[in-house]
Length: 149
Image (cartoon, rainbow, N blue to C red; front, side, top):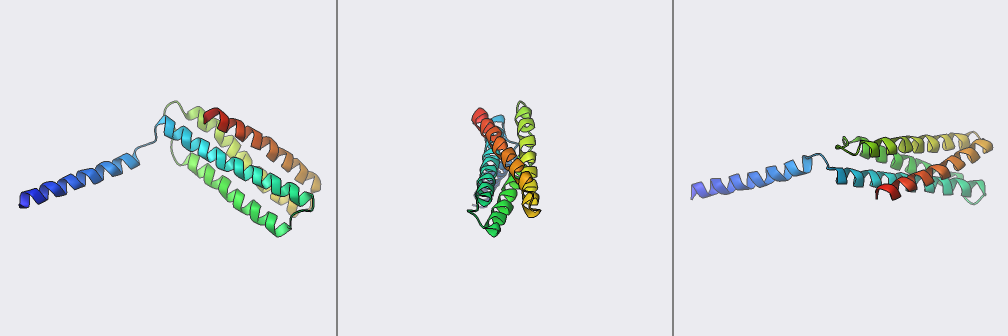
């Protein structure tokens, strides 16, 4: 009876160890691409949301405190997307995916921050430039998603 308990305990330990090893294994190329597309979609949603909110504020249809909240939330979403991509090394064959996506994510964070600064300083020309850059960046992120989805 005691030996059966030890065998059962050892079997459970092996199953737990295999589960942990499976979860801790580096992602394969398919999983990495899926995660990269997910990060790109999050950044795309953030960029489009900030661009829409910024344009609505320029048109007098949005209050400044709401726009500030949108910018803060979406800047956090872009930072999370960056961490998602940087948090795992790319498996063989996916380094180009990372190398194409990271500059887009960095630019998204920079454009959102620069738009916030332009709004804070009342720089209407700068706001327009950053809104145009966000629209262009959104198109490039959308292309990335379409290419790797």
